[in-house]
Image (cartoon, rainbow, N blue to C red):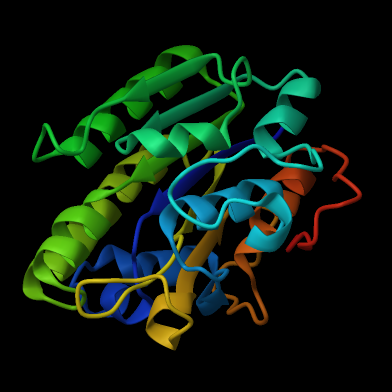
Length: 257
């Protein structure tokens, strides 16, 4: 496909955590990408429902996943992986938390790598290594890189906004930087979170749980522009627009380009 996209999801990343993590590349992203620190996720603000909403552009009440246990849709709507595959896209998926595999139905990804987050201290870095290697050698059209340490080792283990949490965000941003520095001229790169968090939990409708940052870096977006009224439901229509794919009629989000 002519226009290619890398989507990076950093689990549990709050906007204020991103801004306070101390990684200088955050300022670079603000200059090179269109961005927002005030995008809204869906309720319940839980990992699998949020990612299902991201990839299907539907709220949980419509796609039916309201916990971290997957259930099939009663009324089938085609999600991003299926839609891109129907257009001939070669898709790749790198993830460190097993339940998230269900955002990509079987046969929709040519390349997929899972490394158990509970088995390795540096799973996000290892997955980024695999993603970089695959992109370099195979040039897939759409890549989804999911980073989990911010949520598991940062938020739940140490607490949101703790020193360890901010450290994990900085590591995730370093991984995103590696991807952009090598492939940013070939791919549009989108960075998002799925939800935020507070204390050692998330899932509520508190602003700390519901507010997420996003960056859109590529020729379709005005560098340095701060976006308004952005929802996690907007990501799938935006990726489809970048890649020249007709959106599904039932998607509720809007393309941001």
